[in-house]
Length: 264
Image 1 (cartoon, rainbow, N blue to C red):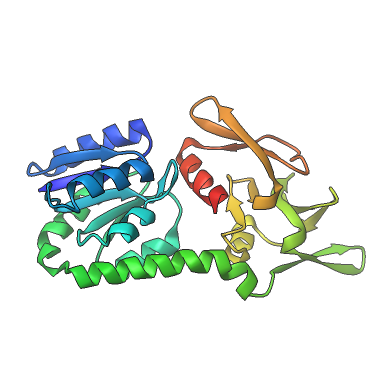
Image 2 (image 1 turned 45 degrees about the horizontal axis):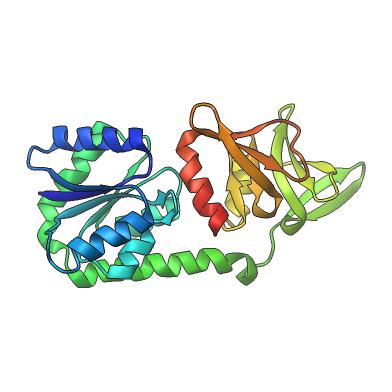
């Protein structure tokens, strides 16, 4: 079984390679690619012209310079794909419907083994037409992400001051955060208001194209991101405007997703 791996983190790539070889003795890894640009070149020079035959692709969704969807849409590759992801549940559901699989990070040995066994049991069912339909869904999904904010009414959140109820439009909110056990919304004029919702409930109502769950304490708006810089442990320190009351730090598992989200 010939595989290609797409993963932009060196440690994650080494771990994935080891796990695959241990889980399936027939596995032969033909290429390890870390970016959309590198993958575009490799597939163009090897698979498109028929130089290398590939049975399966294992790919992270968020790479260092974009989303791996770009590669598969560009070449319409009739190759089964097992995606790995740290956050994109909507994409996960699309793949499950069409018989492909995903590995939720951090990847577990049992999940990887199950995915590879599923490939072996069903590989004759993976037709070019079925995969092209999945790619069409992915493209539509990406377009929906970019249009969701305009197509739907802007979410509104309610805060109370005394006996007054004040509506806060999401487009005016720079970020949501937890302070002293309460969820608050920071608006553009640097005022913050208490909300009677959890971050999870808020996240479910927000357009993911414009808001990102940075960590357990923060959901941030794209327009509030002033800059980001490397932080020890392969993490990112995000600077917001208005400034956040405490440091907003992204785990290394979220860095790729954040960069892809920031690009749009």
